[in-house]
Image (tube, rainbow, N blue to C red; front, side):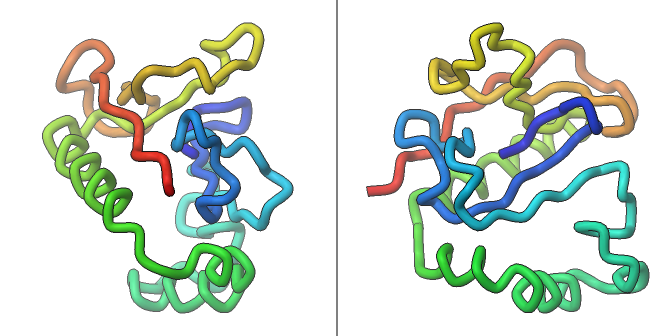
Length: 144
C-alpha cells in the first residue's frame, strides 16, 4: 500500500489476505503481518542500519529472514497481480517523477475502498518535475 503520509512517502508490504477485497491496493487489515518502508530512511531500508551497501539480492535475502511471516503468508503465485505490477512499473518508467499514492487524506471519512483507480502523483523527492498532473492507473485485481 503506497501512500504519502505524515512521515513522508511509505510503502506497506503485506500478504494478499491483508488487503481489501474491494480495493486491492488498500491494506485494510494492518494486524496481519506486514512490513513498512519509509522513504525518509534512505538507504536504511526498513530501518536496517546494516543494509547500506547491499544490492537487491542481499536486500531480498534480509527481507525474507527479517519478515519471515510476511513472506510465509504471501508465498505462492499470483499471476494476475504480477501482471498488474509489471504494468504499473512500465507506467512509472514513462513517468519517472511520479509515485503511486492512495493518499488517505483524499478520503475525509477514510473510505479508500471507494477508490476507482490508483493515482500516480508527483511526490517531493520523486525526481524532477517532468509531467504535470496526476496519472490514473487501474486498481490491482482482487485475489480469488
